[in-house]
Length: 190
Image (tube, rainbow, N blue to C red; front, side, top):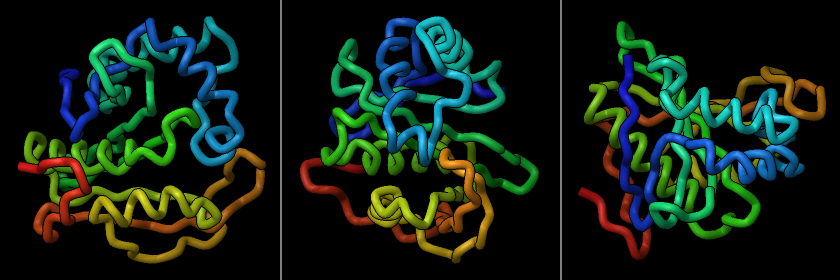
């Protein structure tokens, strides 16, 4: 069982979502790119956005981890990142992220992905993290590459995204023993 924790990601603070982010979660759920590539499943109105925040505030009962990304302790939600399908027997997990339209182009996704990967390798002792993204989502591919996740291949017609069609996906992975990616400008890493 995972216990919710905060993580620093360069100049960003990652913490579990809280009910005060429900309006931003709802706004993100209606944005076209997020609906297409990384939908907030079940979030359709203020009530369901609030329920989503409450569910993930305790990390879904400790089964997986979900952080909101913020530039200040009480700032606006800039994105989310999650660690799921955690398999302690095989020392692996999957990771996913979304960046709010009002925060794109600022390195939010890259900073969050690097920090959560470091946390998962260090605190959970995992060996492998992987992520998948639609082939037609080059922004997600750039975030993965800048965060040290190597492209391992393409899965053909592997996932039905928001348009209802099956899309090819890139599979990226990072191992705990992989060389640390070079630091981003303006950030420090341990």
